[in-house]
Image (cartoon, rainbow, N blue to C red):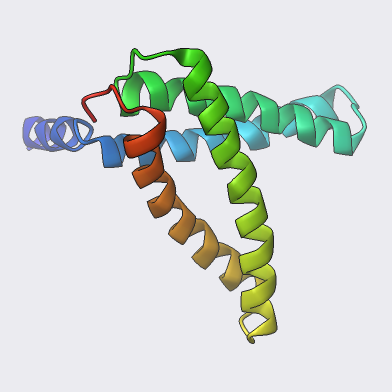
Length: 137
């Protein structure tokens, strides 16, 4: 039974979609942990600690998606700029969609979850087709 579960897990993690979700989860944990380290432990001013934590998670997310999710070996500089542009567009869309869905009557946390889910699907597609185009994912 344990071998079958291990084989199933190994099979799932061969899929770039599953890897992409795992990396997203690891990035969220990294962001939160780094924020705690910078602000909670080191006493860095909260807005600056938040930016630092986001930057650390950005590097982790980009690196793991590039190497593991999509197996990319292309021009890292070009990919990093496209990825940064994607992050900026995500921020703008998140602000607009959460606000719009809230104005439409949804609770803000529901709006945030729906927006995050929708953007995750979009980000997978954009990452595969535009950012990490040389990979096998």
